Image 1 (cartoon, one colour):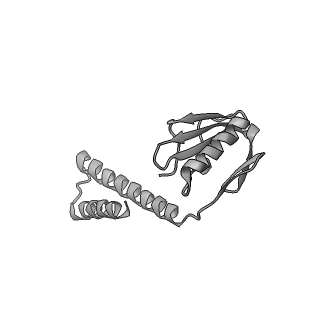
Image 2: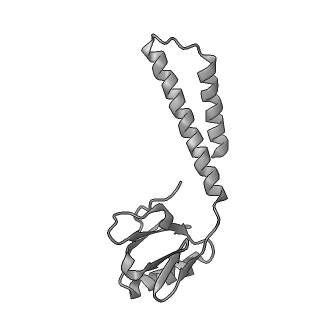
Image 3: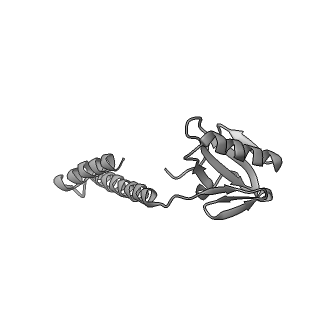
Length: 142
């Protein structure tokens, strides 16, 4: 992903600096600002990808009363629903009570023993009467 973004950046920079821009021609100005916009989006994506790569791993703990995700302790009464998206390496999103979708920081994926971990999470949610939705979209960071 980073390599492709760098290639797009190189092409856009080449296009931006090798063309002469006629400031009276609205089409030239449109292409200039389009190049600037694409360059800024690519820089933003590269920064987000690098930030994501450098993020520390975290653990999710399931205790009888609490669910701990990224250091946040969630009681069963604080959770509206749990969404599971995907079959192979599923992504789990926790929707807090009073919200319509999950915040990005409550989105995670089990790395080891996925089936057993999802089963434990499902059992915990059923004992606390929390709705579990499979194959519903989960908002995630890239």
